[in-house]
Image (cartoon, rainbow, N blue to C red; front, side, top):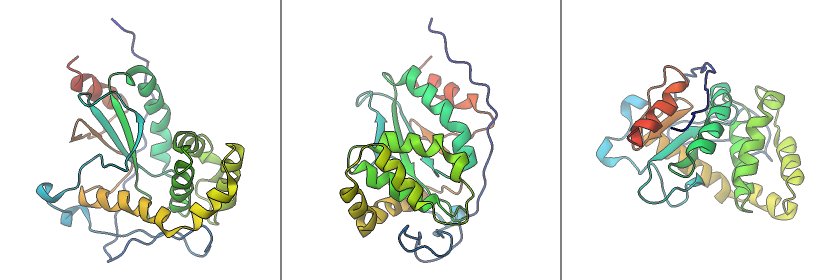
Length: 228
């Protein structure tokens, strides 16, 4: 029998209400100004299950692909969310333990109360266009304590991360300015709204939304999906 990693970190539960409005707005890093608002249907008025989008779409970022028959873990996350930051080490440990048996995917869900959540998601998506999604995703969570809760744009810091990763900076800057990059982030956010998501992290395992009461629930659900 394999030895499972000991996961005993307490989870911080973040519950941020989604404000009802017509359009999701995230402040672009080059515009500055007020914090990035995001809006959409509340969970009460979200689309019915029959109309809900797939959990994994063609553009969804896959961290580990265990094949078409493997259980799939999908996390909707906010890079500035403290609860997501608390879950991150556990998710990395679980990837190391189950990455050959379980597919791990992540989707953007920048919350309206976080000034730089939209900036961070756009920066990660810009890096993804140079096949650097995973290292930029990891850098955001590894440094979250340095920039989280800042009330000024951290776009310059995020650009520095891209430079440290050796990205083509002209291409990175072009991606940041391209409205399609923001639209890609919004695509995930709107999918989350349609799925009834109103907080981060929200995790689905094999199509079922996980109700987290403690962080060990994630591994328990993975084991159940594997039939262990």
